[in-house]
Amino acid sequence: MKKNYEGYKKPTWCPGCGDFAILSVLKKTFAKLKIDPTQTVVVSGIGCSGKSYAFIYSNGINTLHGRVLPIATGIKLANPDLKVVVLSGDGDTLAIGGNHFIHTARRNVDITLIIMDNKIYGLTKGQFSPTSNQGFITVSSPYGSKEFPVDPVVLALTSGASFVARAFSGEVNSLTQIIEEGIKHKGFAVIDVLSPCVTFNKVNTYEWYRENIEFIPENRDLSNLKEAFTLAVYTNGKIPLGIFYKKERPTYHELMLDSKNPCREDLLCGRDRVVEIIEKLCE
Ligand code: SF4
Image 1 (cartoon, helix red, strand yellow):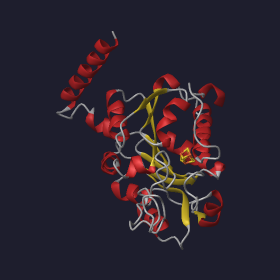
Image 2 (image 1 turned 60 degrees about the vertical axis):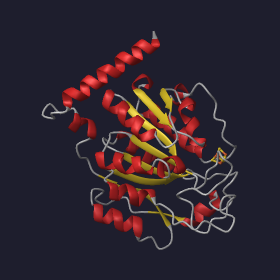
Image 3 (image 1 turned 135 degrees about the vertical axis):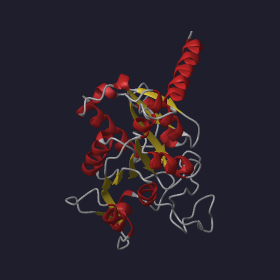
Image 4 (image 1 turned 45 degrees about the vertical axis):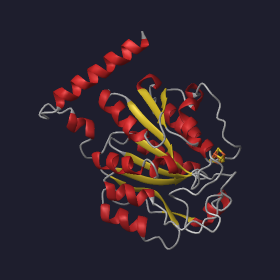
C-alpha cells in the first residue's frame, strides 16, 4: 500500500508544487510493484528535489550538488541487486551534473532518473536554469535569459539512454504509466517530468503546460531511434509527452562484472575495501 512508503519526513515543498505529484506517483508505483524498501536506494542532490530521499520509505542518500548520478552508479556497481532511483532537479541534473548525465546514459547504468524539471532554481529563490526558455526573466536574468535551453529528452536520446520519456505532473495518469515503465526498465531510464514551480516560475504554470503539451502516439515501435528523434525534435511548437524510446542493451554493471572482463577482480577488490571502510566507520 502507498502509505507503507511514507518517508520519515513530511514534504516541505510549497503548496501546489508539481513535485508533490511525482512523489505521490512514485510511492504508488513502489506499492504496486511491491518494491522492497530495504533493497531500494533513493538518491537525491541539492535543490528543492534534494529533500526527496527523506520523503519516501527506502534507503536514501542526499548527495553533493550535481553528483547524484556518479553516486548512484557506485551504489549499483557495489550491489547490483539494489533498485536505484534518482530524484534530481533540472539544475542539478543538467548544469553542474550535465557531464555525468551524458556518461551515465552512454554507460547504460541500470538506474531510474526522474528529473523534477521546474525550469528554474527554486530553492535559491528563482534564477534561470539550463531548461529555462530563452528570454525567461528571473532575478538572475532581468533582461531575459540569453541561453538556449537544454532539451533533456533529446540529450538523453543522443547520449545513449535506453529508456527516454517525458511526463507532466499535472497529467497524473500518464505520469503513473511512465514512471512504472521507467522503474521496470533494465538500463538507464530518463524521465523528464515538467513540474511547475508555483512560487517562482510564473510563466510555465499548470495552465501554460495544458495549452502547450501534446501526447505522442503510443502504439509504435519504441525501439525505433529515428522515430524517437523525429517525435522529440519536430514538434509543431508543442512540448511532446510520452515514451519516446525503449530498448534493452547490456547494462554497465553486467559488462563490468562479467567474468571475461579483466578489470572485474580489481572492481570487486575495491568494492570489498569500501565495505570494510564503511563497517569500520559504523563501529
Ligand atoms: Fe516547488 Fe518552487 Fe517551492 Fe521549490 S520553490 S518547492 S520548486 S514551488
